[in-house]
Image 1 (tube, rainbow, N blue to C red):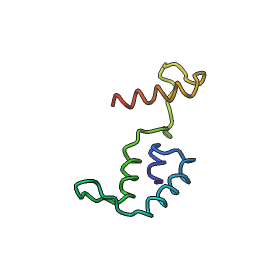
Image 2: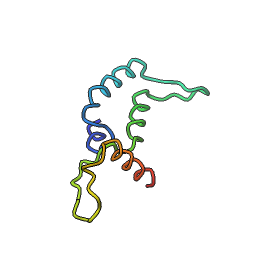
Image 3: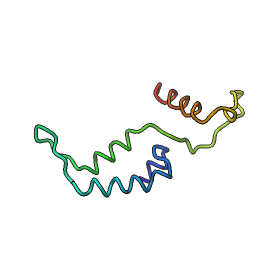
Length: 89
């Protein structure tokens, strides 16, 4: 989970909630799909977290490249722009 936070896939404030989710899924350690396919519930949650796009980039940003400064944009527009960029990759 700390790796997911470091990678920006989870926000630090999500840590307690995700820990609680892992506690809940541990109550049913194995999940069986139809056709007899079994998997660990904690693995399902881990796969979900690993598949999430980056929510935040902790890397230092270079603002000297001549691009417009995003400081005056609403946070929702900045997040939407970042999501669009990552979906193109």
